[in-house]
Every structure is written in C-alpha cells, then in structure tokens.
Image (cartoon, rainbow, N blue to C red):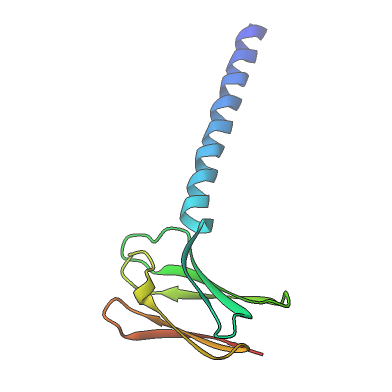
Length: 124
C-alpha cells in the first residue's frame, strides 16, 4: 500500500512540475519576451534608442512596447507604451523617431493607417 501511495505522489508531483513548466513558458512568451523592433542612434553617435515589443499581441488587442534610451556615458532610461494595432506585431512603420539633440528624443507611435496614437519623450 505504501508503494502505491509513493508512486501516486511521485506521479502527481511529476505532472505538477511539468504543468508549471508549460505555464511558465506560456507566460514568458505572452507577457515578458522582448522582441527587438528598431534601433537608432543620434547624429553624433553618442546616444541610442532601442524599441522592443514585450510579449506577443493577443487577438485584436494592443501591443506593449518598451523604449530603451542609452547614452555612451552609461546613463539609461526605459519607458513603456501601448500600440493599438488590432493584435498585429510592432513593425518599423509604427514608429517615428525625432532627435532634437542627443538629450532630447521624441518617439511617435503610429497606427497601421499612419495616425499618431501616442508620444514617448526622453528629455534630459
């Protein structure tokens, strides 16, 4: 009887651990995975912007993005935004980047039809 209980407990634990693995992988893919979309540097090559899509867009839902701003001096800043493009992935045409100088950058998020949706500013 003890052997049967041990085997059942071991089987339950194995199924539970495998289930946690699948759930963790799914959550990572849908919410956390960062897919690079665009990288651009300032005219003087001393600062850069990297835009990534976080997670995978769901059916007809928005796409989450992160913008990373980095200077050669080591300073970094991150801002998030939402791209409303009916569940499609973020593409180069969804972003417009304007460098005023190495310390001031404006990123405009555009919809699929070109309409401006949101603005992310980095000012220092």
